Length: 159
Image (cartoon, rainbow, N blue to C red; front, side, top):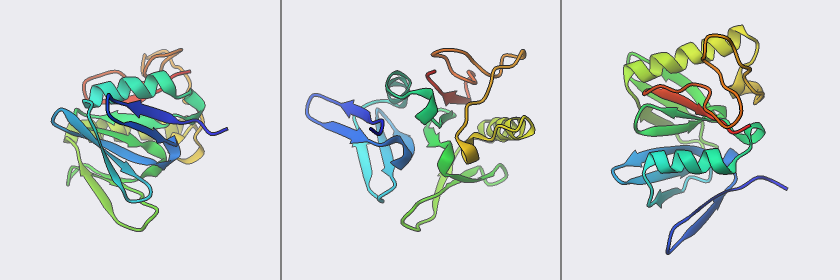
């Protein structure tokens, strides 16, 4: 059975397969979830609350989400490119539309460093969906914590 991310409010309930979530973008006290089918769903939660829901509900083996700065959670499996100069992330969209999202230079630099570090260690999450292992320098994590925990970027995991 496929794992589902269930987000519910007083009036609505949403059930999403994690692999079909492209990204979740903050919009004030709300969030917009961009789905692989091209639809956008407005969630009545702040981004930090959605991040907590992801941590609580998804197992590590199915979780490839990263919090980028204060306004974006992306599915690393759908990441196409990072452009620090333009301050953009390009995300894959199965229906063929180009999806660009803005993020701060600092957050994108940290994302690039993370991707390069995982590549050097032979553990590129965005390609093979395998866990990134713990290291001595505090970059990676253990059970029910985040891989990176600073103000700009976090990989959300629960294992």
